Length: 400
Ligand code: PLP
Image (cartoon, rainbow, N blue to C red; front, side, top):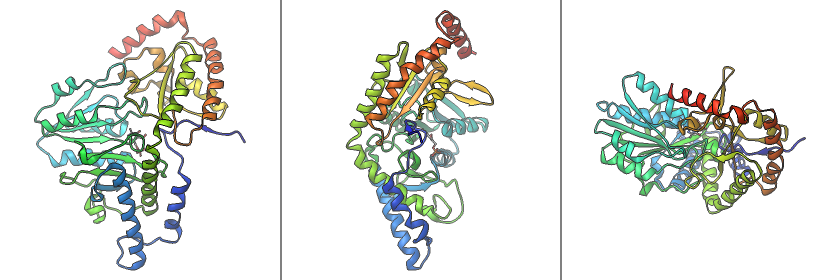
């Protein structure tokens, strides 16, 4: 069987062997309910408490500030809804144009409910301008919700500066840190963040488990109303095996953070190798303020999906910025917001590494990429003579 080279870790990650080992007994042996009065359930409750401490330690937060959820989307939804419900008289939200749909579509939903939403723009490197935030925030702003790091480009926003501005105006500050947790050090004790969402499947825990950090003292209204689990902040019997897994995954992530530069070096090796070997390609996103595992590269005059199919042929998993919806190829909203040229919008590939990525795997990608690019460019209808026309078409699309 062909070996898989998995460079799509921003989509999801492999469950770490040690994480799996830790969680398995809670699927078979220790199946008690952590809320039960008996010793059997009590043992499980103790393990859940340990996991909560492991998650809190990664964020430098208090155990009581961690609420287990089912996914990053739930955490984002719970935080945003809680912030709005707690401040019914404030009707303004600030977010960015490049958020994950978990935030963007919820903000659009609230816009239909009568809220005013400011979607901060980004520059060609995917970075926001703080003066735009300062110009739009008012005493009526209930919430500033921004992502820590972008899932497509890896661009990291100036979180603490954003938080300081939010605090000056009395707005709550929610951060979608689903892509950042485990890749950058976080310190909630010295932060302006009120609520922060993370997701297990992005850091080598299974799908279906996640957590929301809620700063002590933050007025919070639960999304799920029912039992008193999670101190009344998230009803429903706990996903115990998932929680145990997330705890272990956070412990391992903390250890890995000490070696994160190795991952960055491997990413740079891949990125520099591609840029050196293939003409007409460039990195999308800020060159420095970026996650250590992510590179998003725009290949002019080639369809991203075609590159992906060719990579797939070699067992290489990556991702394109475009989402294919009902037969039409929609360019990524993130790359569009960055105002990139039409051919780059359609020819961008994201490679996202993990602690399991090896130099050998990167070498294999570097060995096939130039041939793939050359072959596809030879067939490309987008090539050279059409580039001006495409640029004009892109400008027309963006301004429409
Ligand atoms: N936010 C960001 C930045 C993401 O990348 C993702 C997932 O890709 C999510 C939120 C949603 O997380 P989940 O898949 O756990 O719902």
